[in-house]
Image 1 (cartoon, rainbow, N blue to C red):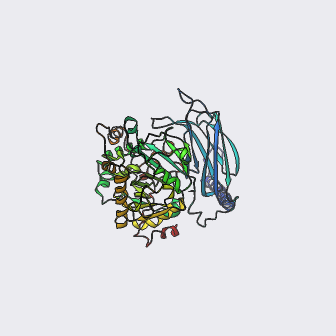
Image 2: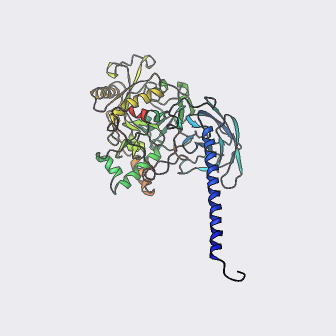
Image 3: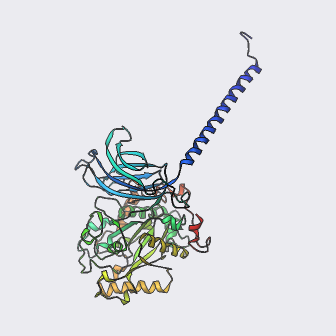
Length: 517
């Protein structure tokens, strides 16, 4: 009908034809996508990776004084990350650091971000980044800035599949992907208070350690230990309107204790002997045989027992966010005025993998030991427990804890005992008695204490915490944190699906969970 209105029936036919064409196109696209996914899945399998991060060159100058203090954060599909050591004052860092991961999809992508460490600041300067598939062989990758896409240097790495692209030997690889498998590294951090003290008798009372243990999910699965709602100290941290201020102070203290810097001590643990060197009265050095990538500060220890294993009790947690084994002496001076030792180590995380105390002992116990016997001739043991009121770990998981430590340190003799076990109490008191009677340890050093005129960490943290809004149950972001080989987590636990808190009420034996995942 020229010049008139269109036939409604004709318009309906046109619209219907267009709709049919669009529907057919969508169906064809879905079919093609499904076919591509099937092909992709058919080619997908799991490999065990060993990645060697060699070094970089031609990095840009980042500091006004000096050059740069570079380190890098490597991520596999945003599921697992590795944070390197800091190389001070260089534009051509050499790392030669290894990262082993089990059950990685052969289609995974490795992303590396290079940063410049700024001591005393919350964030670090970004240098550049690159991404590459995890195909075997040596790689030379160009580091690019995020904004201008400029060349910011060259990075060298080498990746090889340990099983030569054959399926993983783990029958549950699909369920247990991205399992950190070593090397087992440690970092040692000193309380910022230590630099303001003189006549320090024991630097260990101002030190914290992290050991990045492997295979945690193989033994614990997704089981975590939630904060104890029946424990008054935990209630002040995690519950009620005043808990925000309490958490802010503890989190500020945690950031200060575990701050990554160019002066931290780093190293690789190859066996039980290396662990017990960490537990000596003094500070391990290269001359003592403990591999180290960064020397770090070594405050003098006046004790004549500096090279001997110290009879001491340690407070520990195994963190959910990076599976690290964090600890310090239970009598550490920085614990003064904090509501919970374990919450300080855990950065107020609402849950941990496990927590408690441990102490080393010669076979048979400290009450049967004499310093006439050199440490090298001693069969050393580790006694570990679940003595933590803040998280009240399930005693049914103690066998898993023992197996985890023995998996990481073959040949390690481990006794995992419940906090109410009389054998634990006897062994712990014998350890403290030997320290007092034979090693010159003072009674006040067995519990947190502050020296006259000393500004406590809690006071400094309270000042910083009041200036920093409470971040909820969060941890320091990976680019600022101290973890090596840490799994990537979202910024806030409260915004994500929390790990499962499955204790003995769900399983007759703690090890049953391993078979269920």
